[in-house]
Image (cartoon, rainbow, N blue to C red; front, side, top):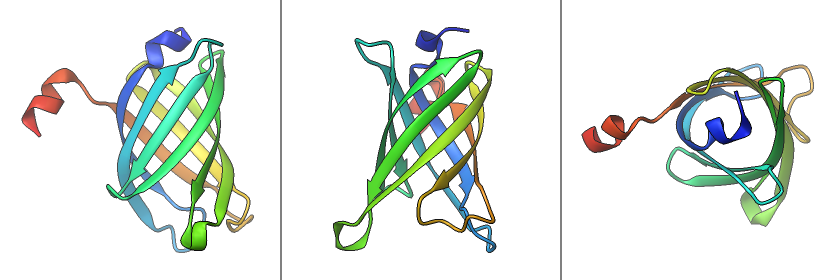
Length: 119
């Protein structure tokens, strides 16, 4: 698998970095920049945008991300995805202000052209 194989849009299902294990859904868009690095944009619950930059090696994708919370406070973290196939990413993440006793989790599934037409 190459970094270019990961470009596209994915449906995201995840759980937060907390004891309550609160779940969320959204989308993840991946593109490759001129430096052969991943550019990532998440849209969680159709309202919260998160942005990241990362790298890919041995079917592992690592992305440093950030988003703006209340009062424009910047939250930062890192997500690690095991790329099971070019269409399925299995990941875990942690952010600076999250509960250090837990990791967030994400599973991402590629949105196929036929999926987009059905929506």
